[in-house]
Image 1 (cartoon, helix red, strand yellow):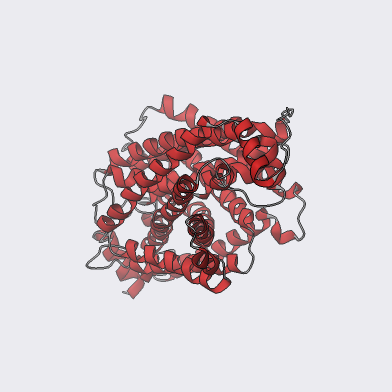
Image 2: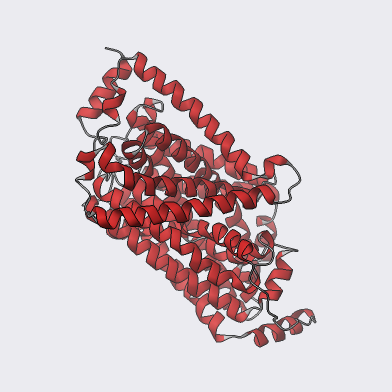
Length: 504
């Protein structure tokens, strides 16, 4: 028997080596921290540049963007209750639809998230610089603004959290959960300040600091196409709950805790988004945000810094930095478990499924994900496009969420034994309408997002995200076909692999 066949047989017969130690709070924190970060501190304001004409309608677009997220979350909860394994979305699609669809869609997700981890690591450093500047530490602030030190600090943050992920679920939870509560506490300062001050206060503060008059806020008619394009982009703010599903192999009582954690994450983050965005737009005229977004990158701390004393400015900038920091361990967990699940099924090099004997973590997959994120840092350092990465990630996640809704529809026919294990909304009378609605709504968002991409004015074709995403899919297809051919040559029963769940 070949080594590949022996490995496949032993894995199928035994256990993965992962340890089910993550509780409900850790799972919810994984989803929450994957969603909160650049999404809340940057995107609601820079969107005025990327979707011109959205004007005062950002909050309604956020609310509308939550609709497909809720539908996708329900689909994830249904599937997670029946298939609580590492790799989440890949396992769901490969068992309910087709292994090829599961792999290529999750590969583009892995690529987008890995690059996003690098981007977040790189974007984090200016927030640290702003904290130093607000505290009067000008030497440190200047140092953090230098090219070499910024790159070094970004890499140090990334690999610190790679180390945290390597050392096991308990250290991961002890790190992530306190940071999550600190993030909410500091974010609450933004919400209180935003609703405490009004736009007249902001205009007076800008006049005092810069000697500049701000025009009164006007009205702007709502254009449906612009509204849909903005909602499709803001949808990126809700995609992090997918990280919970990827941790399915390490959750305690997964049939219950995975769906519950997904629900907690979506409701908590959705509520926080609405309050946070509404607070900033309450205090800062949308006309000012739209005008300034065309000239420079905007953040919530940068905008409210006009209204707050230095100490409170430090607090809200620190809150933004903590939110960005939280992205790193949560997203690293998600991308590494995708790689682990591929390798466990044999459609990726088998060594990637190795589990550390002491820490019970997929250490090879974690390190490889860290290397891919390092490429994202280096790309950002060489003047990459932040929103190009966001657009690629949105495309990947819309495709994934669409597949999850279709998986709910197809699972009983493709894999009736697994379908009987569904514990969340087990009635097909409830599942089918929700999954159909999700398919229609998410499919519509995908069409709008692709349309916006192809109609955008860019300097070169490769700044359109859709061709880049298609190129990534082509790479994934080549990898899949190669590994599948190797499996068959080794005598592995490929159909048997994808008709049952991976080992726990």
